Image 1 (cartoon, rainbow, N blue to C red):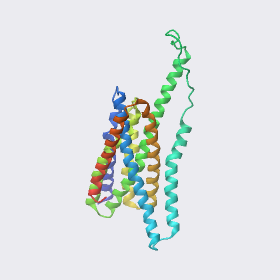
Image 2: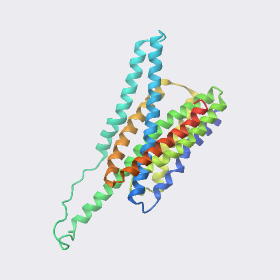
Image 3: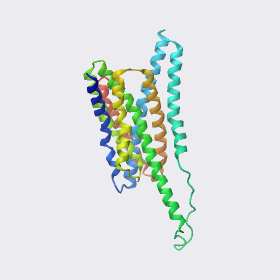
Image 4: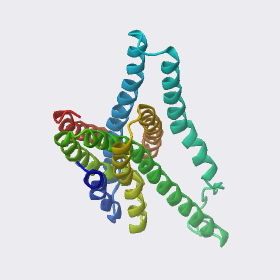
Length: 287
């Protein structure tokens, strides 16, 4: 399989993420649908978290086995674990610190007291409420883009797998990987827009989120065709795992105020099982 064919397969696998993104433009989303979409995305992200952490642990475990069998030094084990720890910490606490710096300060408005006459807002108050609404919209879009970045890190590692198998001449395996990753990535679009809540993103934002989340599969396939590095894979798995864990916590906290707990947990299970089902296609192909 040539480099151009590998790049094309990576593009096909990555850009199916655009299938689920347009749902973010749906108007008049009620609380039940909002909670359902958000928790569906949590289920998908929970599966991705399990997937990336297990792959990362396999890479470190391989170094432990090599050391145990006297095929490698203890320094290799320490180095890989350090990469795992640094990437995971950067993906959780690092992203939290960056988002805190980017978040604008908000002055809370006092509750309106008294009768209907007292409820009439003075001139500065509508401006303040508009500013809070704009701030909430910015934060929702930042959260969605953070999810896209985390998914993109995960998808880069998936692209590496496609590129490595194609470079080794395993055409059948590469093709099945593409089909499996394409099905899997199609669900990830919902994971990006589900937590946006009542925020309706622009088409430009959706296009950017799709490129951030799906583009790395295409890039990873090209990189994997040229070079294979377990340390590089581990870095992206660790970053993705940490970022996804952070995002799950943010979504969970944001959706609690809407209620519909049972519905949310049901959709969480559906999202997780959708991830498992699409991953079984990859497993069947030997990926």
